[in-house]
Length: 349
Image 1 (cartoon, one colour):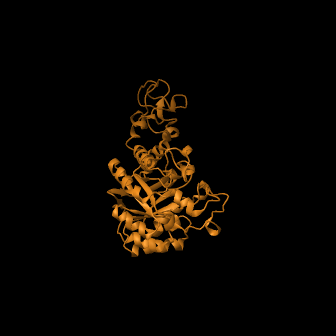
Image 2 (cartoon, rainbow, N blue to C red; image 1 turned 90 degrees about the horizontal axis):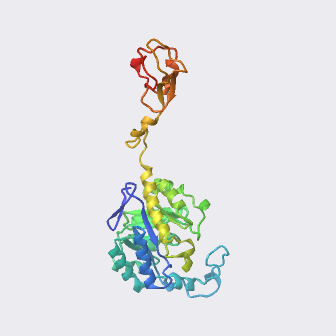
Image 3 (tube, rainbow, N blue to C red; image 1 turned 180 degrees about the vertical axis):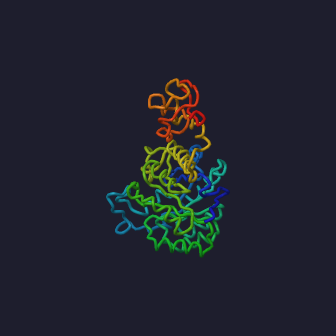
């Protein structure tokens, strides 16, 4: 595992986590709103913005009933027809160039999730710096092979995939030429719940496959993302919208600008806090050593007097002998006169 570079930005444990704002269908079929989302993501400090590249016809069939209607009372989209849903959520191909350009102007990485091989060809024409494979496509080996063959970094979400399926996906990507690979732990429910997030899988994935690992997070809030960083996640992806109250396909589990800004700030703080295995005072702690307890004279003493609990105390500050010597000192004699408040040192014993 040697790290991954996307558009000049390094991804790995030596850098703060890459935070990706996923636009998905939150543009609500308005290019103006899509560009506003780009600008809000940049102001919030997101490092990358991600699109989804498909049409309703490239992802499903225009069939109204039967298997093509969602029947799940726990789903945000219960009762929806797949073709209609994807038509509503899709980002028109003719918008992509404008969105990529606005991202470049604002210094934000822009890439996309292709959902079929023709989308990879389209994104190649736009100069996409990387490709993301969605959880629902991680068993679509022809698509993985096509994206990997570009030689660009590949990010694969792991939602729903068995270990055997992940092994097939990773093996396929590597065989097709992928040299920079990231796996994102993902729970493919919308919204996802913390108790089914199983973030301890993150270090296990890293160990098994020797790749960078992150989190594609569909939970509410930023708590799961911070926990993921503590477990070594180097990429965090969250759906993003201008305002949940505006509605939209994914708005219910998307972050708003202030929340995205908090995510960027707190994941970097969490990464900084990981540090290294360390014992003893840090450089910043050394000034605080004086506030430890130590041995001090609690009364004026004359040469030859014995130390007792009345004239020798364990108190702050920490300029005297350490408290571990307290019992050893009791009954011993002081070598010279000393006033109350004198730190005990070996030359006084």
